[in-house]
Length: 352
Image 1 (cartoon, helix red, strand yellow):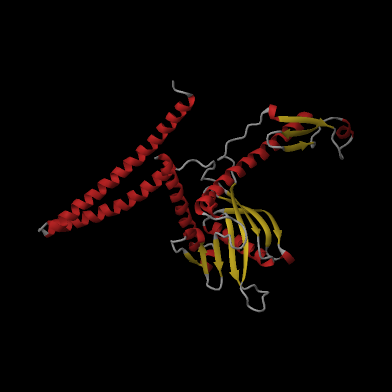
Image 2: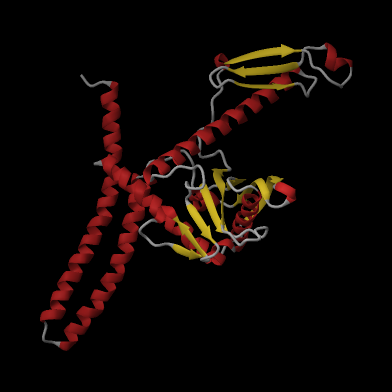
């Protein structure tokens, strides 16, 4: 007798088969294109008629162009059909957090450099941004921490791979001996919209609601009536309370909304952590001290190297990257392709 688990497995197999059929269709078209090229190459090689040779070579060139387009289409289709949903939407704005790491005052200055890089990149692409929070570094120079939002539907998709430890190697202005220092800072990128993560459900049975007397200024009503509300969400341990309004009903509604937002943000953070952990496990790097880095900005050599692109020799000009120019675009695009290839390989292994 078939069980519920068997039915679920059959459903998963049917879904996988449907995705593979779409991929197979484009793959067959690609194979037909290659066969046409072989036939035309044979014709051009064996024909004694110069006119036929010219026609065959011209058609071969056309089929070659089509082959390039079909290969790209096949890759994109395989990625869209086979890579599982990670809990976020690609079309989202991004919240970027930068924090100084090892290196003291020099690390804070490096944070400011990276901040300017991302803001310049955003402006060049016509994306608006707004600073949400910032804390200056030692002596008011640089930033110990800064948080900003890039308001564009493509920001999250383009910047999600920037998360990690960024390292700088340069001679600080305060270094009299000219010795090169190594400093680090960390980048965190989160989707600003919660639309990509399921809306949280708050069950009454999961909450303990306490009503108590409001405190603080506000007249006799505030201090003599039990209108303040505290909600404890047992599964998560999150506690929220509200006493801003004179109405018990209103305070409870506001506290419930605070709880919903807190749980939603926790869900987003969990989804992001899953993405980050999976990708780091695939690429074999961990955030940490100076030795744990995803990218190095080397000022003496005027070079930027992304260490996740080993074997691809993606070394970019320092000035072009830090100015948020085309060199940074090239890095972002190379990383997108790299991660999509890894995810696609994993999805193919799972589908087989």
